[in-house]
Length: 437
Ligand SMILES: [Zn+2]
Ligand SMILES: [Zn+2]
Ligand SMILES: [Zn+2]
Image (cartoon, rainbow, N blue to C red; front, top):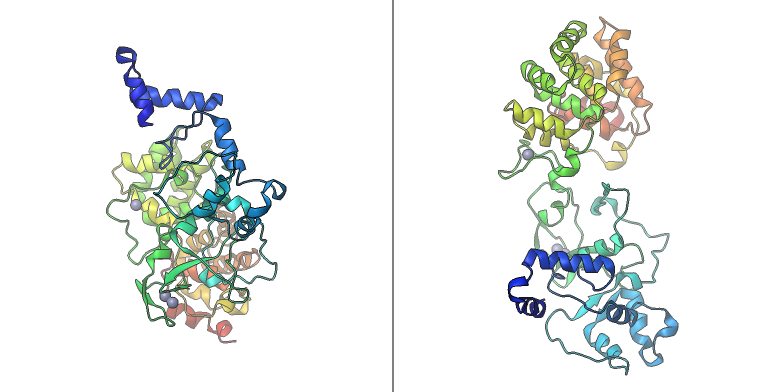
């Protein structure tokens, strides 16, 4: 790149600005005349002959039959570990067809995940408590090329590869890799949902900061006092483009006053907002939460695409804290003492029969939080206009038929501050019949 800049400068008056030079490179990259990636770590180099790069890559990423016989050992270890040592690379380039330029900087090896041929065995048990599962939703309808290889390479550069205790081989496969936190000469695997800041490895007595792993999802968790960090910019772009689920509207309604809800509704609703607001007020049977959720839902239903972005805009315009949206986007962190297997069970009618006595008029909120829709809740409400207890019973019965109806889901919903705010103790007492089995 420096050389290119020098050449450019020689053009005196007609020299390109650095922005123009970058555009020039990108256009020619698109045309296939040269190779230039405007990415950290790559943008300082321009490959003026694309065929050259292909040849270089082909010396490594290629089929068995093209590997020189005397270097087959290198190929074998590459296929097993995805790792290519620098000295092996130089060995490959010693062949006649390459002109070698020495480079003493940089790391001792390179990762070539696409060359790994080991498959993960079917029987492999993954320890779920101590594994992080990342799920990404892509905004465009394309999956970025080689995304999995990029992930694997990224994680391996942050953490260390696990070595199988049985076969003492590296746990890297064609589609995945097991990694852990380096601990002395070994690796540690700890529960990533630990709530303490530090964790002492019982085996090596080493202290680890738990945020080493929790940073990967920490911003999605409900924290103790549920405040955003000082420099929180609000929801990220992916969230802003999303349509709020009924559950989110329920949580937001619980965090807004009636007056605040009216203000943002007037801004959000395009047609006759003042009249619509009055109609919602008159038709909402129980006032309070009902009015707020019905108004928010009315906006969602009547706009072409209701997004978090629109919500944030309206909150901003009315000087209402936009971090309420951060709060409602976070999920409750599990902090229950029951064994995991029990939390995964589906409660029976008799298990939850004591519950309705303790829920009072928060039935609507509870129902939405449990995953019933606003429409379903409106129906349940009109089925039992005056009988709150029957409403709650119907909510629980309807919910119990959902595929994901487990104790864990129920406990999280009941625990949520904006909903019932039930303490784990109280919960355990109410659901005791089942959890003591
Ligand atoms: Zn450790
Ligand atoms: Zn350890
Ligand atoms: Zn925030």
